[in-house]
Image 1 (cartoon, helix red, strand yellow):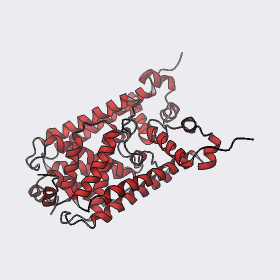
Image 2 (cartoon, helix red, strand yellow):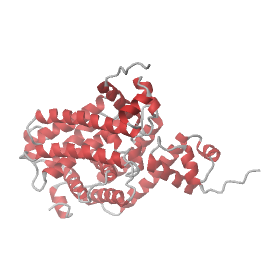
Image 3 (cartoon, chains in turn yellow, red):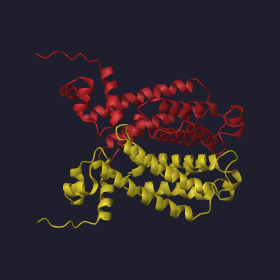
Image 4 (cartoon, helix red, strand yellow):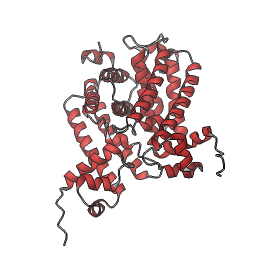
Length: 202
Length: 202
């Protein structure tokens, strides 16, 4: 008679995210996860079916946390340049604050998305689409977008800046690089009057 | 008595780039390279010292090709908005044209840059710095940068757009996503008059 498992699935998924985020899917063996979590391989397979299933569960959990974090940032500021400023600042500072310079697990996983693993491409693309829709809903209420820029285009542009910020963080950039990038991003999307009135550019 | 090696080192390095670019460093075993190239493991180790040495040689070669490609694009257009437009268009179309949607080997390798592999971080950061310097040299001669934007900041911004374009390509984006992103990037950096006169924005 085996002992019943004593792990908490929430804690376990957090530990699995840590493993896969740090080293990536390809470089992480199931035995690494066993060692990091103390949960036997057989239990991991029973829970997730496969290493791929484990990765997808980790991506989904991380994405939900990302959505919640983004929602909190969006709710703190009314739609417009100042709100997107907050989104970009959040991405930059969260990235810099990580001593392991891991960037973003979702963005890193774009690299795991290969033709032979369509589930990853689909999962990551889906999560990115959700984030874009959240940004777009807010941007649709902004009154300071430049003429000719749609909320959809602006949402994509902001998301792409977050991607490149998360990449830059992995290369351990000089801290002063962020503010210039953020200012330029906002200048691409919002009216000069709005940027002046929110103090983003002089 | 073994046969002398019959490989061409240039061709070999091209094949190695193909292996490592497709699957990434972690997911590529030396045995995969042996199979793809037909060169024995002992010969590969004799040439490169280690799998890490092979990756660094591949990165260096790919970087040199990237520098040459960028130089050709830069030389075809005088400095300014139109030149950076050409750089971004080149990145977008080269990315879309790859049926395997591999993005950029250098950008992908930012994901291989982990704290326990400082050589990779250093190599990739160095190559990125070289590219940024090439862009900056050109931008220093541009007369249409927005006031308050330095050539250094503009070079970093353009580079970061190329990164996020290369990420997006991996997710198989809709082809119409590129032009809007490129227009917004240029609007962040160059005067409206210049964008109008070059036909980039109306």
